[in-house]
Image 1: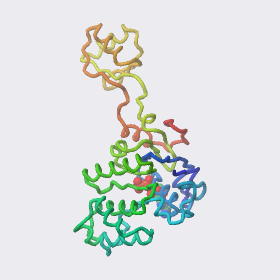
Image 2 (image 1 turned 180 degrees about the vertical axis):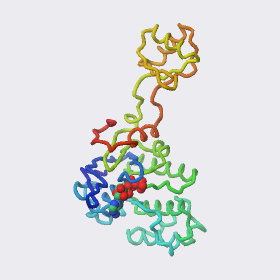
Image 3 (image 1 turned 90 degrees about the vertical axis):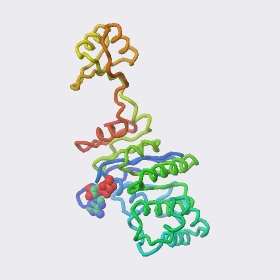
Image 4 (image 1 turned 120 degrees about the vertical axis):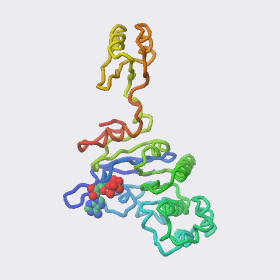
Amino acid sequence: MISVERLTKRYGDVPAVEDVSFHCAPGTVTGFLGPNGAGKSTTMRMICGLTRASSGSATVKGVPYGRIANPGRHVGVLLDAAAQHSGRTGRETLALTAQITGIGQDRVGRMLDLVGLAGKPARRRVGGYSLGMRQRLGIAQALIGDPSVLILDEPANGLDPEGIFWMRGLLRDFADRGGTVLLSSHLLREVEAVADRFVVIAGGRIAAQGSKEDLLAAPGGTLARGLDRSALDAALAAAGLRFQSKPDGSFLVDAPAEAVGRAAAAAGAVLLELGQAGGGGLEELFLNLTTGARPEPAREGVLQ
Ligand SMILES: Nc1ncnc2c1ncn2[C@@H]1O[C@H](COP(=O)(O)OP(=O)(O)OP(=O)(O)O)[C@@H](O)[C@H]1O
């Protein structure tokens, strides 16, 4: 469990994070989303005790991170894959982490296997690693202590499509076995594919949070487009349906798709498109929430 309560960070007069609260439960992957400079990394750093909060608090498994004895056994953290020591090999890096964490060295080989760095890559110096390889090594470091919580800042950065697919499976499996995952990413489709909950932050404030189902649920209504705009307009009106026309020539109808289809059929209006409105997924949600003005404080599960 990760609990963040009214976390705030100011750099001088500039607020980087303001009044941010959310919870990540065991068995779930929480996608932490926001545009550049939104405050994701600062929030994650505060959770991990690397940046001191101006106010508010964060706990992991009920205690502040800094008070967890041997945190690597409980919380796997990957905040900056580029920060690894470039002179050590991948295997040496993991061996050192295992030693510090008090983990048997046998787990080093298992983790290298798991992240796809076994063999020759493990013997190479990290300085010669690609960003994707560093991310894999960072994930191995995060997992080596067999933690129940993972905090990962942009772990998919630099991974190729196969790597992203692999990581998605790894995180899903981790959560399905009862683990807690907090994951920030710019790769919206990847987050959409793996996360159960989203926390969206913009301008340092929570713009929305809730379950995937709640946040991505269509606002209701049916989107319809006809071959002849005025014919469909007349058909919808004749059926007594409430609707509004959109600038692109389609109609947003306050009725199920079947009713719209029947209205069009009854009037002989040819339909080119008929579907649920608002199916733009996470990308549309993200853009709606984060484009433009600084949002006001949000309520749980409610979009601003
Ligand atoms: N050490 C610092 N000193 C001053 N301002 C900072 C510092 N660290 C972060 N900031 C500012 O705080 C705000 C939030 O930054 P943060 O790195 O947390 O955003 P982010 O959501 O992680 O962005 P990105 O997606 O680009 O990594 C930004 O305006 C940033 O410039």
